[in-house]
Length: 413
Image 1 (cartoon, one colour):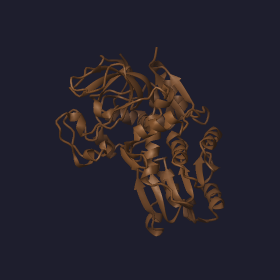
Image 2 (spheres, one colour):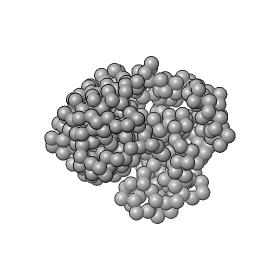
Image 3 (tube, one colour):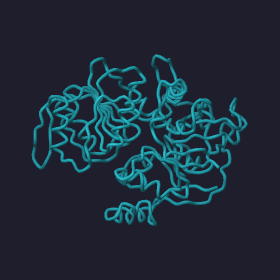
């Protein structure tokens, strides 16, 4: 089968990183740690596992960050992955073969696979404290030598991922896709579920002014999730491109703050100050501060610069929800203590408790899509074959020239 495999060594990281400083495309060119390879169709690794035939495999911002070498080489996240790995955790697939203990799951069922591989996947009947609560994304098991701790689909040597024609998963990861949900919306399930989980971690209170920082699909998903939950708060989004502004408005955002990449920090802070009736204060070396801000801020950027802005744009004693994949970065944390902010992390998806009762985030979103409570058809999908992976990555990296919201690899005939 054809697959996109990622494998990085210290010398390749150093050479590719150096080359990317002059030409970012080096990260997905000849020096890239990503390769299109031929691999055997994977075998089912245990009785509670299934093999899946991929229909669509999404390209996540985390995947792009990995390929573009944006994480510091000392990041702890490397301890929660194992390489070489066939990438791809966003997916919609069909069950191709089942293990002896697959239960009611059968060949031909269309599913989405939760990337988190928790204790249930070890088939030994033992669950850690968090997996027992339905929080497999926070699994405390230390792995088994083959799977790393908190293993994720597409970031380990065992399961493969959706950037291949086939991959394997444990039945505890499977979620049936209703017939009413098309493939093109099902493949958006993971990023939208991540957005829903963030909103459920901290739902706006009546009257709170909300800001969403970021212009990717999770940021847009947060806007859609807030409206699906019936929140009528004033919701503002800070983003870069006009095509993203149009999509945000379709999803129900109240106001858009356009911040092109070349906009100066002073101009960005003036824009926010005008929106909240606050005051920008200039500090040395171009650093900025803000008196006033939003009651609740969701940051989806994960970058040092983005998190710094999100912290400063949160009002005194306000709440900041960190949603984006972050790492080792330079962040101005002064307002955390100076303004007594509350900071909440939101990672992945899990068993949620809301008006619908205990339900996995995936199943909640699938229910919303099937009932029309959330409309993902406004989010355009751009499809690529695996052989076109360099074009897909280039267009995602150059969003300013290419209005791409979500790119996916199409494995269908």
